[in-house]
Length: 462
Image 1: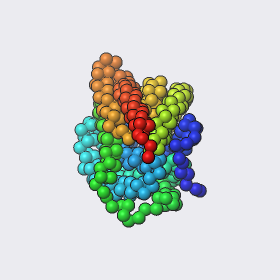
Image 2: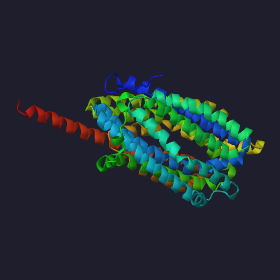
Image 3: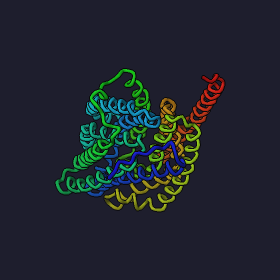
Image 4: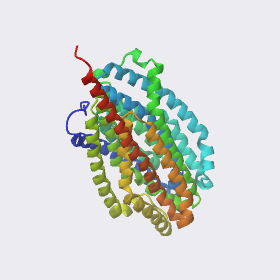
């Protein structure tokens, strides 16, 4: 199996973006598969209480994952630009520095997660009958932060080089590992929620090893000891890209935790229904996040090569693909959503009926709003690929504001169903900032490029 490095500065944009994304979609499907199996095993075999316990920890867990992904994706932007420009020595220095910075960050994040887990769960008013289970799940997941950081860094390195197939193969292996271990640990050994968390971390470790093996085969990425020496200027540039993205993901997660705080006040049945739909959230946005990863790489490489027009044509192609995809996924969810949700829900007939009512209504609202989310992913990622992580961060602030304000005021007007529209409102808030920002940044780039061309023409020859 060869490493599939791809130069995205040549060829038809739509074909490049779609072919790159398809591997990512497939990889994300396998990643979601083992997330779904985790939830299905917990919900079906451990009961509604255990499902609610996992749900109560979701946003805090996502906060940690979001910070990790933000940092590593920011590092990957720098790598994509250097690869597109052909600066391979600088690329190696960025990879080495990113590895060291990621290691230190992982240790700090893991310690912070352990320290704040219980206080945050208490602050969120997690019901007393599930808080210990939620805490156990988080303790194990936070202990595995270095593993999660390693996988995300290695996957970002590969994607920055245009390789989306190796992460796919890694996810296939990890998914199979996770599913087998889920049943072994939870049903065979009776380890409950702890078994589900442990299975997930072991699967991540397997996928990390897989990616590392193939990165070690890339000839131009053979790192020397000097590449791991931190340089203040380079480290500053990497953090300048990574920290805003980490903050963006973090503040979105904090908004989600505020939603969870409100949801927790409605009882275990409501929490379980809300959780069941949130577990399908990954399937809803699976193609959107994949198109986003593709745009970061595509835009980053073309910016490095100075091909601004290709960036614009790629954006148009990606947006068209995203709109078609989001509509198809929405239709499928509306048709098959009840069956999928049923995989996560167990209990008495009355509990199942009440939980399903909550879950399907929430799923229907998010499905109909899906094109709004896909605009968010494509536009935000295009801006990040341009090396601008500040404006996407501000879209995260807008998303946070809209989510929290909606979850406060909409239930006052419409009752508990108002909570389900908080996500849609958050996406709309982010889209307003992102679309305006995209046209602003692209206009500035075009003016800068035009000015440079005029200057070159005016300079006298030799």
